[in-house]
Image (cartoon, rainbow, N blue to C red; front, side, top):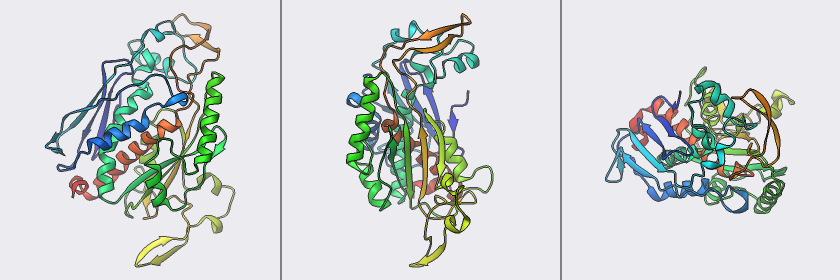
Length: 363
């Protein structure tokens, strides 16, 4: 089972949705990186469900860092984060143990692990595990921010409602990172919330698109073939539950245009090389060009819904009908945005330290 991502800086995830604890191990961090525990808590709060648009499962996420720090800074040895699970309702899953929930990994997990997997709440496949990603990612986000690199994500669309476009990206990132429901247009945000609540009322769910921008990434990071910036980021982003597509820059719009419209023309301003447009999302030939990295993630509707659905009993080998009970999100997109920020930071930190050395992140 492959639960580790990264080469120079790596993260390993462990735990199950209804187990005693979940957690992560960060290895390869430079010694001397300051640990901002309040920032870690704030990032975890962004992932937590709120009101009618989230699940009724509320976890305190009272994390502990049990190795790899001393006197508030990283030691350079493996850093281990533990997060206890305290609000499990495991009995909700006993009756449907052998029913494949449409859109979930129940059947594929059974096929891979031969029935030995912890099926409760999705087990190791659950979105619950992303809490550990967020806690670990917060440490790396802080370190990147100290190097001038900032990451921000907004809900580009949800429930058929579109947010405003990025404008002043630096100011937009600062504002987005102060919000629990990350939109650039608050009125559109209210409309999205109404669409989520309407889906919940119908026992259904909605999805959407997240758009992320990264500023002040130096030019020259990435590899030309198998470890392109797009490839490494996509590898990390597709680990986020519900992400089913990734687009960099204006990738899909370009196919209906011409090169003359979508080539990014270069110019020099204050001795810096820039491009007049950013249709390629800050990457050329798999390598950063110094412009903002911009990409979008397609987030599917939450597969756990309260409508009757045709399925199979994969143990009995017969057709069946599933009617879910328990606590489920009518949308996860607003909670997933901080997870996207976190895996983006982990992936970029790995690329940066491969180019500049692991100590670079703490210098």
